[in-house]
Image 1: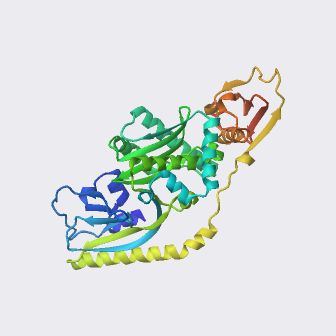
Image 2: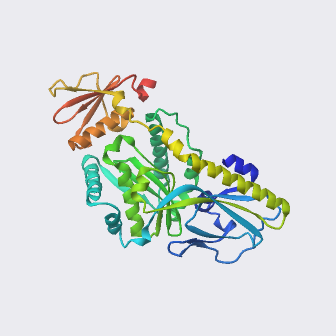
Image 3: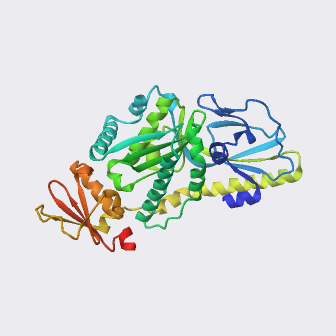
Length: 398
């Protein structure tokens, strides 16, 4: 679709223009949050009005419908809007506090589960929480983005899919450092020791926080790591006085649990109403888009039924053997390794699951590698983990 739009029109993505490139003034006079009436952006001085006369129609994609915009393209234009994908958000300004938000949206059992999950995570690992906003060191910034890509690749591999680097990730990496330092973005990170295990990139427009993308280390899935990271960001938004947390596109179960408001994204076709060629071209693009999204929404339920659910295959890919704890536990051919040096995500997940079930501190465990096996020694028992098939380690690939 983006390629077709680039051919047929002057295609501009709202989020890229406004949030990443920060070129809002090239297109808009003002942007307003319709929930509060407050301006997210407003030109300080009127600039020279741009004209769209004689040009291909302009198509703006990914425009949130709850944002009221005033274009700086003059008065001789036509704007046609089509609803595209669903979005969701939290109206932070509707609550007096983070605690009120939780109380109104989650039952006592759900709130207790959040607290239990975070307490257990803190108990089992050396956890620290950090939101970078206003300052970040270059070295730490690069570590975070490297970890982000590694976690994405691991999750693709677990699903049996080939991972291709998201082309947008390189753009995020290039531009986000400056945006964090200027308080136009924030990066939320949960660390286990010095290793990032959950990351989210969030971009800011006025008092609106857009949750662009996130990932976490699936080895820690038992601990509801995604929920813990998200709640940490939501609490931070309340503390900083933001009005909206926007989950943006995508229909995921966690969004339906945490969001309190849904809205449609819009695609806007803009063309001159003076020139005949511009009108015909603009009408054609508009009706083509309208037809496309009519078919999309009509067939959405069918596609949803046929979509295969991803399954967790880690239990089928690993064998666990329990042995007695005695003086001959460690052999001379076994090499001591750190948890982070274990390359198999299946073994890492099995170890984290063990910590979850036994409420065991990771620092109390010792790990030894022998060929394709990892031996884990706790204070009470010894477990040997082995992947069904050759174990993917740096050492074995050399």
